[in-house]
Length: 48
Length: 492
Image (cartoon, rainbow over all chains, first blue to last red; front, side, top):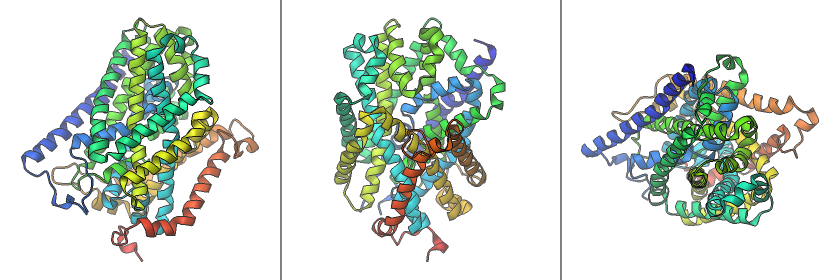
């Protein structure tokens, strides 16, 4: 593979593969933090 | 009355990923990326995720969470009686896609089973087999019925016990299958030629308008933004959900799945098709998936197993997207006053019958894919228009107001909705229509009975908008809650 192709592959995999893993981890960690804070149930969410 | 809700953020994200990752990631992205400059295509494709898909995802999240109704009710709540018309268009456009998408899911499931049971028969005459499957074949109808039934059963279970629970299983399985298929493809002798083709950067291709427009179209169709599906899932989210983070996870995850699919398919095509690789990539979505891929698996060591793995992945991707479409259509019927069970049975029955013509003849399938695929661009335009009429800054500050600790949607959202989305919409619609008009006479272009013509789009869209306008007053009274008027100062 040419150098430019390898560079593009690394950039794309980092942006989307790594980005996805990082964002998903952040989202799930925040939820865990919310649960730890006992903040899971929002009074605005108890039905309508 | 208590409201259905996703029980966890992972459940919501898995459902969003299931919605976004579909057959298009596997049968369209690798082919279009390879044909439009590989690495040069990936640059605008990555950009348009943030310039088209993410802002429309945010709009859908905001509308669904505020209105707590499907697209028809949400557009009515934000725009009033006449807002029902674009709401009906958005809802029907995605429902019309659901009709033939159940057929696609059935085809994928059929190939998974057929390749597992009788690999030699399917691969020895792949062209003839596909011809047989796609034209008046009652086995195809049975698989279409099975796909619709499966989706109906899941959606009937509700959001938490049906959609969320199933997607929590399907998405990890899908990602594992895609990783396995990519490793198998790259490991083939000569497989790295496919990677070279996918990631090679020919900067001169960035000067071609086609590269940009194909990248924009792929991003618009692939992420599910502007379909009304995210709006529907947003109905079941908490008020304090971090919508920007969730939109980014779904969008970036969708693109990651597309890359994995391309890293599975292109190495296999280049390693196994040799000089016929261009022909395989030029054979269209169904041609590549159902004619070429089985033949390529037959030339591969362990091809029988990998064929089942690959088609299993496509089936899972298609099914998880079908679930979201069935849920959206069901939500619209529920908003009319039906309970979930009755609504999903209606949608299942209508979906099966309306999908039959596409199951029986490929020309009908191609026509519907053309008309409603382009219709989705119009749907995206309607979402942007609804936000502009409502007031973009007002929408951002009221409907996208972040909960404590959540990411804030900034002024860039206003710029994207006011400037980028309208420009992108006009460019895409003009280009796709010109792609027909530039090749044919005016009479052929405007033929309403043609398969890929401007006339057939205008006829079907016009009929839908006309009917929606006629029944808008009745629908508004039936669906929209007069106490929930999100128009604020504009209300009469």
